[in-house]
Image (tube, rainbow, N blue to C red):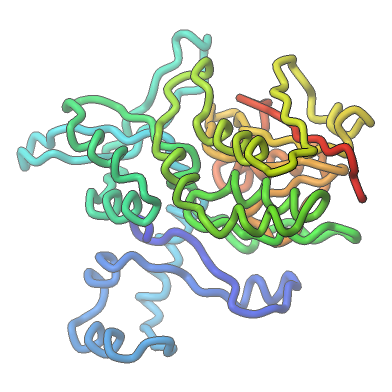
Length: 332
């Protein structure tokens, strides 16, 4: 669960704009609930699951305010320090500075955005990333630690979901916590290459999440997640697929040209905030972003959305890493 509120989930099949706005569930952190509700109400919620419970207008407004503060925020770094007032070890959000020359860029520590260590531990346990959590616990004080790819990317506000375009392929595998790369690649593979292979990949996400637990410190270090996705293809029996790393600089518009159009290009996105926590797959002019249940057209505005433009004004700047998968028999 999030630090306070991490997002919203649709609970109906109607995909119109009005239904997205009016029919949604806001996910609350247990500690936040404990702070804002009295014991009888908490006891009632503990004994009556899957029920609607009314709250006061004041509490509802507090939820709304907290949602607006936290919604869509992506955490790239955690800073570990000792609080002077309490002498306790604490953790907070840190962000990459994007101004100035690349070599001069550092991180900005935001101690007003404290992160609960219990949440970090719970999230790492859910994602099978406990090795990374233990490294965090052993890290020295006053240090800033990069997070695993996609480990804490918060769910976007349903109001910001793009409108589905005619002919858009469905995304078969919506991402769970941290599986954006595996889910988007498997969805594109399902759509254009082989449904059975893609489905089998999604039956076991543990190895993917284990690869994800290795943090990326700099561009020159290859992403373990991207390597894992490549290896999935290499292990296919009777393999008729080819995997190639894209080492030259490629613009997004080039992915609409014949040389890339019918292959699946897997991309680790680089946002204007220097983020490197989200992977999408691109094929046949569509972007498979597994935050959605349908693909979106390949264009700059779509890539801005994937990088979190509507949440934190981050825009698409390019790619950290790319590779493509081709098949000698493409049916679509």
